[in-house]
Image 1 (cartoon, one colour):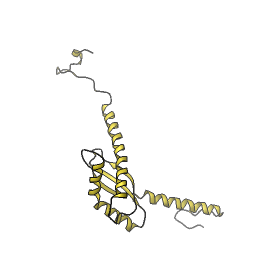
Image 2: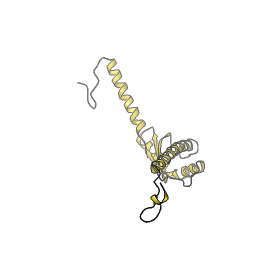
Image 3: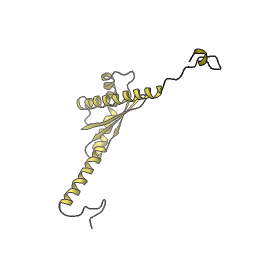
Image 4: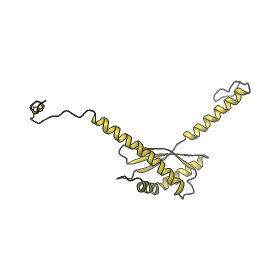
Length: 156
């Protein structure tokens, strides 16, 4: 295709758009964000384990980190085993230590901007433990020759 053929009505050259550039850029940035999610999870876990001094922060597991596309916020999902009041106290301790954790993560992972860290409780481990208890109960009842109890009710 000659330059004359590429010229539009306005007299400017119009070149074909590169094939699927937006998809490639999006895929690249998504891959980068996934790598950063894993790095944030590892670093925040290490900071909580070794450098956090708040007694409210007990045994906390970082289960997942979700960075926003613009990398301005990081939602950190944590699991805390124990009663509800321990979970709430740990979450409050984490929220109060968020600034320290943010500065430590920024020091360890070199980024232009350190994202704001937002902590969220993740109850998936508690739900998993409950499901395992129910499965073990069904297994014991089947082994005893009784039919399993209907969900949410008593056996008839």
